[in-house]
Every structure is written in structure tokens, then in C-alpha cells.
Image (cartoon, rainbow, N blue to C red; front, side, top):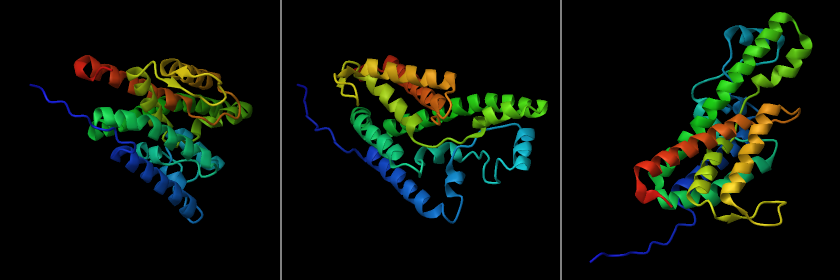
Length: 246
């Protein structure tokens, strides 16, 4: 005789809760310490770039000594957010809570934590790869002495910060596991199924990453990297463990 036990889903499971706490503490540290130290610059993800380009940017005064890639930034940037706007962290943390709590209740804490960090690292990897290619173009413009092109391509050395890449992976996993769940999205008057909402968000990021719209400071390829990592992981897990298919 089999025994069935009903377990009430936790509305604020421990991994999601602690991730949100760490992000909030990091945000407070950025607000309080950045006036005395370049704290935000230390924890941002700075691009990998050729040594020659880094030297040229230092000489031109574009980069400071703290503005260069360090391996620890692969992790710290996931917990840092823009100090200039509260919306950045509020949106990311709300989205993490809304979708992450479902996945943690389904998978358990250890697997969800592994998934979250893998998506964050996948986001960083794609972002750094694209930025490196853009830095090569910037170096070529420096070599050619093309001042106009240099000014247009300086975005290649912009840093990235935020949980958006990891959160994007969480959203993709939710949409894969529960594709027909209806979501209410801001400014859209009718509910949208999760699978179509995520395809739409991915299409927007792909367009934003390729089009390079002036004034757009969103790391679109980081979002796509997180989304791709999340999709591949949940696809693999469900192919190797049919009991986890929803």
C-alpha cells in the first residue's frame, strides 16, 4: 500500500529568501560605501579586453585602475544592482520570488541553487564573449585613429551588474515546465501563456543585442546567456529524469 503525503508549497522557500537578502544587503552596501570607495566598480563585471586596449583606455582616462576584469566578479555582479535606480533591484527580486519559489518547491533547495548560479555564470560567459569581440573592434578603431568610431564603440567597455541573467534562466525554466500558465504582464490587458511571454522576451533581447540601440544600457546578451543556460539545463534534467517532467 502506497502512502501519499500532501506538502504545502513554501511561499518563501529558504534559497530564494536568502538570495533576496544577499542582494538587498549588497545594494545597501553599494549605497553606503560607494561614497568613500569605488565599491560598485569592484563588484561589477568588467569586460575582458586585449591588454593593448586596456592600456590605451587608461592613458585616455576612460578607465580607472579599479575598472578591469577580475574572476570574482563572475559571482559578485549577480548580487549587485544599479544604485541610481530602485526599480532595477525591485524588479529582479520580485521576479526571482514569483518564479523561483515555484522551482525551489519543485526541485528542492540544492538543485535550485545550482541552477541559479549556473544561469548566472552562463549569462556572464555569453556577455563577456560578445564584449570581447566588441573590444577587438574598438581596438581596431584606436589603431586607425577613427575618433568617431571610438566614441560610438565605447559601450564595449561598459560593465554589467544585476541578477537579470540568472533570473532570466529561472523564468525560462518556469515557462518550460509550466508552459500554459497564464501570466498578467504590465501594459498587456489580457493574460499571456508563459511559453509565449518568454519567447517574446527572448526576441526583444535578441533584437536589442543585435540592433545596439543608442542609449540602451541593458546587457541583452547576458539575458540571452542566462535564458539559454536555463533552457539547456532543464531540458537535460527532464530527459534524464522523467519523473521531473511537468
